[in-house]
Length: 120
Image (cartoon, rainbow, N blue to C red; front, side, top):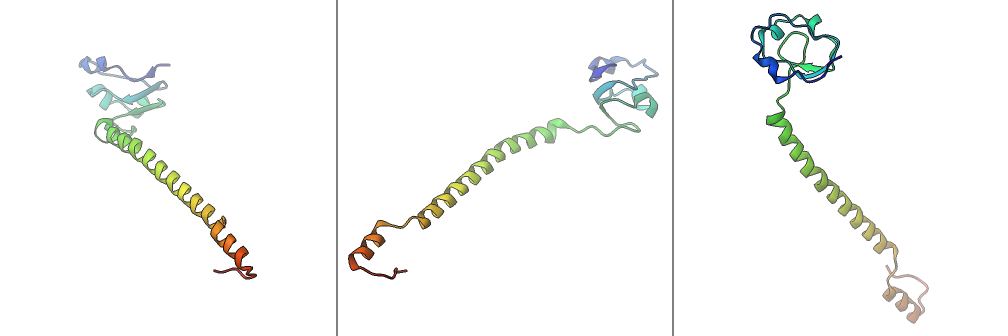
């Protein structure tokens, strides 16, 4: 029951011929060795999230080129959109409040003239 990623030290094991790391909790890229690239699907199966350029594994994503940039963009845009949404809600609430609240000028003018009808 190994877990985590395969250590970088495996890249130095050029004499390694056969590998079987099945039924563990390993994740991340497989080492760039002939033994791993030529390993059967059964030798790598049932791990948590191994990736690599071999049969049965999903390709590894390059987290340095796009993933880091995407995270920065998300972290910048989310607060911006949140602030704009809050500003829109406050403006809509203020306008609704202003329309529902009668002004003192219209009340006093109606009372002075004794008008029965309201002026639009």
